[in-house]
Length: 478
Image (tube, rainbow, N blue to C red):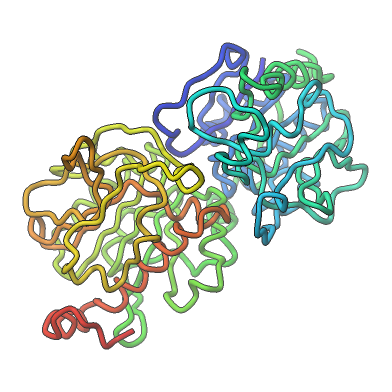
């Protein structure tokens, strides 16, 4: 029995191969329930998905570590920001300049990679068909498998995969008690199992490896985390050390600077984004949804609904977000992959597959910039809004669609729109996911969009907003 702990909103359109039937997806927040946690930690093996809440996992570090010590095997995916199993190393971003900087190399044999040609891990493309490595160097995008490395590895660790010319540690494993931890520092390892290539072996190999641990039925249930008995201690442990204290609704920002809150669920991208020194001038505040009260939104000037949020956690805040839309002094920004059609008034959605390879192939992906005279374009460059998207929005009448998808000569939906007429607050909605990509260290255009959004809300904040409007959209407050 293998459980895969997941969180956030899975990307729409993903398909599961047959071997995934051996893995049961479990909401990572089930760890907070005693009975569910006992069931999870009685399994043979665990997969920690890249969308899981690291702050949540840290609260259960003792239990997860004991699971491994008792003979369990765990695959940890993505970029570890806060170690949630004893021995985990923190991920470090690689400053790469080209495809060879992120080329993965085999360092030490491991059964999960048996039969895998590492060249098949180097590039990804959505261009239909099966392609040779030589063709992928022309049309593929590198960096999906990994774009960072780990130092200060735990005692007894073995580097499985190196990255770049110096083979910096990307994938590694280490023993912990009677069990083993396997770490993949990139997009979820199981997502690379593709039957068209040698990487198709990864999925079945992973299942065999996870089932091969030494845990038996007699191991019983794992203990709870030591912090569970104290809600106060649990809440304190959950706050990112790099972020300001959770908003309370009574604080005020100095001068005319807006109070900006980033709503998130403790996954690695927002944690790394909040820790980015480049964002410090804007003083973004952490609003960690599992521990925050929805009433904290009343004290914010700008509410940024981070991308790919856990739908259960977001649902608890949806009424407060809608209430914030009735405040003319507020700006609400809703980022991609949040199923806005289910909770945001008046907006529809149509799925479209994500196109991420057009800059390599020259293919026209249909993205068009509209309303060139709109004052918003003072803050957004074409590169900031045309890297990729996750579907089409259908905003209510009166909203200004600045970035659209053109299909067969007709605008079929918006990729980014601004609405200043259908509710008192300013509202910007996009299907792009800049926090995820900025925090992942991937796609420079995403970082540009995030910075542009922060510049926009700061320069046009009330009371400076009236001066902005009277000046014909030419800001003097930057």
